[in-house]
Length: 385
Image (tube, rainbow, N blue to C red; front, side, top):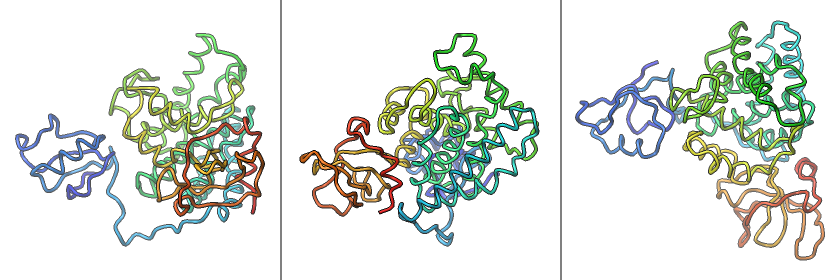
């Protein structure tokens, strides 16, 4: 939909359909483009134009007005029980749906609607709790649980970008269904513990085409859901697959899905690898693939999930170890944490929660490997104090 807005309403991810001034009055070569960089946003704000037209079918819409009700934030300890139930329900539903797809049965997207709504509600109440629970998974159920995790991460990402509730929902459905094509990949390839051969890799990459084929024959699949499934392996520099799309040929949701898919793959347990700590995965996303990901969106994803995501084990300036419980508006280095270990004395502490935004002289210095300290961060994260 084409709509005219004040230039002050512009934000990254919008598709600029036109600048309401003459072509010679602005410094852009094109008048139709995705607004993807802070530098371009500043150039428009500094231009003579007062209003801009955007295409909400190709990019983000305006933010909700001041009268739109906001979800009250729920502390981690209050959201935990609900998030655990929702994750178990989502795991069960996606397992059933993807198993149906493997058996060649017609999948019913409407089965996903209630659980996606509940996942969205949980993330609006507390963005980190449910996402952190999705890190714990079984290697033999990796595809099912990766789908649930991708759903939660995409909803959280979209929420951070202030997308409206309908887009959050479709992003979540897209996350659940993005790997449905893997249900048509032979099990001996999908679950192979070692490195795939070139021939096996080609079959694995074909899961995107197979997923598009399956979803195109499924009633109720929206264009946004299809974008997530079709584009989550594309890369801005054209090195991705299956269509080798470049730049903003990839939709905003597709560019978001590439980031989420890689982050979750890096941090999760698979048959062929153990998974790395979230902070290390974020560093790889930020530094390790120049030209592959949308750099502005990577920065927004890091802001959404936190430099030290919920569930990370961190070392504090006070020489204690703590598990991150939730992010804090007080700063990325001052989350709410659960203090569990005194490094100086070499002993465990009775766990207690601490808001580092209000703790004078204490902050996060870096992350630690839980195995090095023989600590189970999931157990500590789900502990009821």
